[in-house]
Amino acid sequence: MPMISLTVPTGALTDQGRASVQSDLARVLLRWEGAPDTAFFRAQAWSYLTELPEGAQMTAQDGAPRFLVEATVPQGALSERRKSGLVEDATAIVLEAAGLAPSDALRVWVLVHEQPDGTWGAGGSVIRYADLVALANDQADA
Image (cartoon, rainbow, N blue to C red; front, top):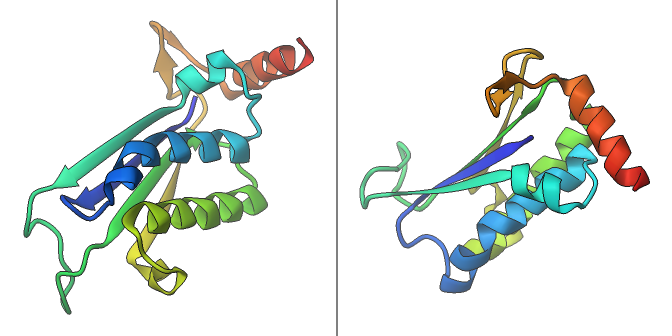
């Protein structure tokens, strides 16, 4: 049950990138989490796009667009190798969506937030990581 959000300055994405970046980021997050590619898990991978108004984001040096990706996952869902893969792939997706080159990679920050077990709720119940793993295994076997 991951969530991923991208915060960008308005106008920083290409039209095509804006149309696809949310689903692309959600898919890559599910892949690195190791979730099965099923309708259920795709529906649980929420993706947000927040576009900041002009002038709302800059650095101490310049106003060139910067991009913030925040992924929230259950604690234990991502090993160090999986986190690295997620950061690499999410960065590439954002660069492509903005029409930027790999040399602009430092303009993309990816923060991985691990939600402690027992602190994530959905459907009126607390969701535990072990329950998600069992569900994923059941769906992978089906």
